[in-house]
Image (cartoon, rainbow, N blue to C red):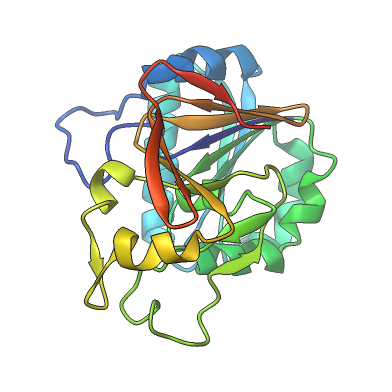
Length: 246
């Protein structure tokens, strides 16, 4: 299995673009590596992070179709999996060459993955997996579900650390170039919440255009990133850099 865990595979989070279709981000050899791993006429399975948002999921499927075609990545079919058809996940996984783990709300997506036993279904998968934002976060053995919605950081029952798909060991925090200034529940998202959560742990904050590439048990960090560890943050790499994590 070849695994690409992105912050965003195209454009920047929350940044409007006049360009359509959205082009895949070519920084840090992302498109080059993607093309090297892509099987001709791939069957693509998009697993949606918001399984009950059908219009959004249909739009996302079309957007990926257009972006992949624009990058000359050929497909035989692209399927979006949500609550309308999750009972067919076994059939879809048997056909899939590429599995996309969509972006959204980490706990919501995590629960959907569990409902479909996705972790177990991926154990013998020999294709390519691409994670996006929450999908990348949920790919870890232990997932850091960074609080995102109002009330989550103050809710004593909110689980910040949950079991993931186990595709990588690295805990990813995406979209750092934007979210580093976010406030949540009257606190600074990073300085007051995430730094404290990092005591005894390591999080890798990625900017859009950076990603983790994993294959055969090795994990390679590609592009600009920041290590959050024991309450402190430091920049560890820049655009074009590659660091072996595992």
